[in-house]
Length: 199
Image 1 (spheres, one colour):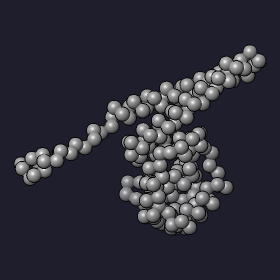
Image 2 (cartoon, helix red, strand yellow):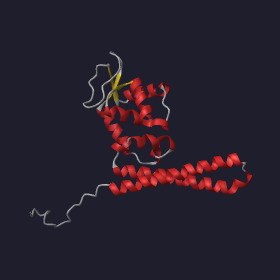
Image 3 (cartoon, helix red, strand yellow):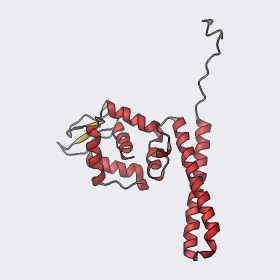
Image 4 (tube, helix red, strand yellow):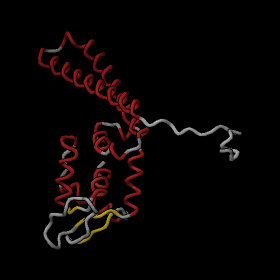
């Protein structure tokens, strides 16, 4: 998850460590609290994997990106060609790891760079997971409602409402994605005049 977030931000512009941490907080909001303790070991591992490299504070900035604000000589992290490939690989993942609580928000933050079909698969997977959770909470409430004090009951009902609200939100997103999806490319059938070189 942290690798995807780092690669996505460095895709836009080289950043030094402090800037990167601030951008992570701004981009991901309350989805995840990042700390120096987790960030720098991850950066070292990504450097060893060949996905990023280090430069000094005078590194060239990508055209159109905001300028670096670090002092002269501060280490700046930049994506390598392998890092860009790794970012695309992570964006294409649409299995269970992309719709769990800890990872969905990170994938969603980079939906603008994700293939439309992958976006829909992730949204559908997330909705399915929450629908399972919703039914589990409903079953538990029906079985234990009479034994819960009113505060515990309100907490359980609040959790159920939160899940139902996210399911509705996801359904709206999926419907919007399907409405706005570009039409599939049409290919002329075999023996069509265009296939034979006719005008």
